Every structure is written in structure tokens, then in C-alpha cells.
Image 1 (cartoon, helix red, strand yellow):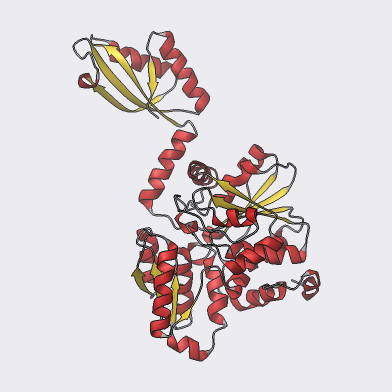
Image 2 (cartoon, one colour; image 1 turned 45 degrees about the horizontal axis):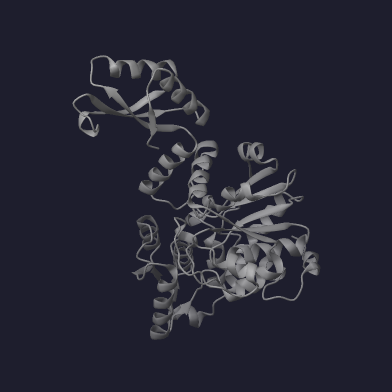
Length: 412
């Protein structure tokens, strides 16, 4: 990056020079995550879609960038006293890794609802973990209490200019690889990631559009952005645990007001589908928060642009991934479960099997239960789960069953 790029920046909490300095501070440790062109998403949306896979970053998320920059700037005196932070997971791992790398003791307060994989990973990097509260904000309050009690230095996950500057290095990499990028789509929790990216990107090229994405059930920054004043969400209800922030950062909000063009929201269902498609088409694992930018592509009202979607993290446990994949299979029409009432006479099950075979449906599970039928002396209820090729295939199967006189009720 050329220092002359800083000429475009304006006075702000955070500047391009801060981001350029952060890059020098962290470049020997962080992974330079290369862009991946997505044929699947480009085909569906009419834009050229590129993926910035920060799920392949050290500790599995972008958070290591901000943590390294913040901790790398601390004085020897502050390092000796130790660090404390609060996080739903990815920031915790970033701080733990950075602190371990620099030989500093770190304590992380995490919500009790944090996925076990993130808790274990944080401990594996040498940090002391304290579980407190149900959401980030409650963990944050406990961390601030411990900060005062023990004289620790608090490393904020998003509302800190040094952390923001570290996250902003992502924009430098994007623009180096794709100089004519038109749009960068970024997940938002508390706002630190998009703050750093937007400042760096706009300073280099003011025409780059920055679009933020939040979950419908955790939309505090969207509410703030739309109203023009810092607004807290009444409640948090989303599967995107990494973005479950009720109180957005005030510093982040000021940056976002100046540099972000738009903020959209996505549903939990859309997040599950995005995780599924990313795994199926690109063989990349993302957590639900990490897939926000891909879920938001359906919200774009333009065509023919070069769009970069940031996959912010991939720290997801196997059980959660299995549940998400099942939901994805259903939503994409790859799995179909239905029930049908049959006459309690020989050959009925064979007839259903024959129809499914003719339609190319692969039976996964059968439940032939007389006791589920209301008039169980004459009928039995059959519940069938089949593997299908999409929603059109499901319609063909239903039509074939209906044509043979069977009344199909969809279970899922």
C-alpha cells in the first residue's frame, strides 16, 4: 500500500494510516486469506461474487487481526498486569492466541451459552475462561468488574480504534487482489469489523460501497443506523451467536454513520441456507455469523458489480453443523418427509415404494404405524423421508402419489 492513499482520508476516530500501521504490526503472524470466486453465487445474483475466507484465518476467524494489533501496542507495564476481555467466542480466541504469542496472561469472560468448541479452543490457547451471563453484554459487565478489581487491561471486541484498525487490514488485502471491487459486504455484531474495513476502503476509493449485515434477531446497529442515534435492541433472538450484541459500540456507530452505505438484515433460515450452500458448493465451513454476507446477497438491488462477501468465521461445533445441514437439505429441497394414510391391506407399502422408485426418490426412512391413524382398524399411517434433487423433484413426487389416489401431507 502507498502512503499517498492516506490523502483521501478525513479526520475521524480511525484513519487509513492507523490501518496501514496495523498491517505492519500483524503481517508476520496473520494469514493473507486469498479471495475465492463463487460461480454459484455469481450465477444466482447477477453480480461477480468473491468470497474473503476469514474462516481460514488463524483461530478460525478475523478477530485475531484486531487482537494482535491492540495487544502489540501495549506498554510493558500493562502487559505485566495482564489482559481481560469479553467475547461470545471468536474474539476470545483471538485475544488468547495473541496474548499467548506475546507471553501475556489473559482472562476471557464468555456467555454461558457460548458453543463448547469456542470455550475449549480459548482454553487451549492458554487463557483463563470465566463463564457468565446468557449474552455478550452480561459477560462484558463481569469483565469490566474484574478489570477494576485486578488492574487488567480490557481488550474490547469491537469498540476500540486499535482493534478496528487491525480488522481494517482485511480491506487492504481485498483491494490489492481486486482493485476494481465495487461492493464489500460485511457482517455486523458490535460494529468493529465493518468500521475498520469501511474506513480503509473508503479512504482508498470513496466509490466502494460498504454494505453491513445483521441478523433480524440482533439488529441493534441497523436500528441505530436507520434512526441516526445509538439504539439498543430490546432482546436478542438469533442463531448467529457471534453477533448477539444488544448494545452496539458508540465509537463504531460514529464511524459507521460516516463510512457505511447501507445495513440490511437476514433471517435465521437464510443464515442456515447460506452455511449449507457454502459447504456444498465451496467445501468451506462457516458459522452462522460468518455466513451473514452470503445470506444478504438476495437483498442487493443492483447487477453487474464486483462484490466481495466476507466470511468472518468458521468456528462451529459438529452437532450444530449437523442440525444446520439438515435444515439446509430441507430448505433446498434435497430432503422431503411426508405422511400418507394407507388401507390396512397387503401390498399398499409396496405400491408406495414402486411410485417413489419410478420418480427417482431415494428412501432414507420409513415409519409404518397403525397407531398413528385415527381409524386404525381400517388404515395405517405411513411416514416417509426421501432424498430428492430439489423442490421441482418434490412436486413431481407429490403429483405422482396424488395421481395414484394418495393424499400427501408434508411433514417437512
